Length: 512
Image (cartoon, rainbow, N blue to C red; front, side, top):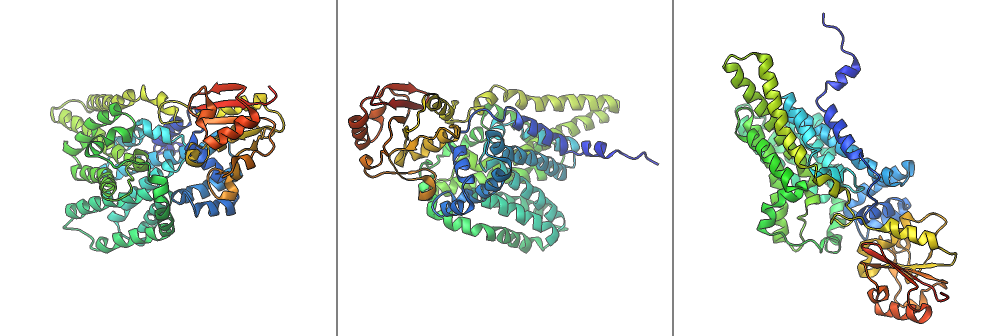
């Protein structure tokens, strides 16, 4: 009789455990730094509203993120709205994605080496570690699509509704979290086609109608998001450029966040596709990774709105990790088989194969090290932080009761300067809004509504803290002309001007 295995030992022996732990470590490292950037500030300002105000806002903007905002509304109600608290759901979601990647690779390639390698490799691309630390929906969508892929494979093996149900739930969650994630259906169709071709002698004909029906069932809860999102797409996506053919060719570098890491994955991917083993399964995963990207690229080229953005397609990276893990498993299996054929000792064979496989896995991991620190500073997507905290610190240090604050609104509200600085201000430092007709809550928007007549909206402020975009020595030259005239006539020239790196803060004090 075999000795009983301790539950902890049994747990640690699961292929998904160590990838999940590794991703938790990568995502949790310095989770509170850098400061929140503007998209994360949008999450905060929406999630912390009352449920009624949140639902009203989604009627006007950001309906495509509505499910995520509702989740974060519940989360912040329980765990608070600190920087770390806002980001923890993304860390947990990406750890779940790593676990699901390992399970998917094990199911496809039948190898524990492939499974563990795939799960660990998901933590390597800098773009994955970045969005594991960001209070936005991309990590949760990535986890949901990874779950959908795993549940799809289970359903293909035995197509019962008990197995299709979790697939439908995962797809619905992904679609509600971000509509673009439904483009994964293109890759799933390719995977299904190869599955039917590979198993044509034993094909279960139920798959031909069960899969389309399961997709339709998953899409039903997403329809309200589609209807609302389609009315808001021009406002939210108009800034995304129409993609070029070159953009498609180089998309892998942007998707991974590093050309070095992407090309370090290539030998592992090629190994899965060409070495003896489960090559058909490898091609299935390749279609799962590539076809969503190609389909979104085509739609963006042919329609009036472009959706072709790396973070919108982040959910395809798990498929690349599965494929690279399959390559690691294929290398390990091939080296072991060749050595055994030549009569070498199994123990030495395993050691050599393990060292070779570990060396291949180390290449992308080492290649990513120079890239990781820069991507932690996600503030402006250019390696610098947005100085909301710095501006709040300056205001707090010199604040007096009766002060007002003017910040970029209207066409510049995308910068989220007003709510960004407000997030970092202490509760007892609340300068009154200047040039604001309606608060963000009352306007059912992300930012306050600017006042049409600036002279009517000074609010009797004794001094004005003025925030403008960019670094400048002439902040009044960076505000609308009518606002500048009012400020000059009543407060004179700025008493103090402080460029902060992306924002400039000035103090207008008529008594200075």
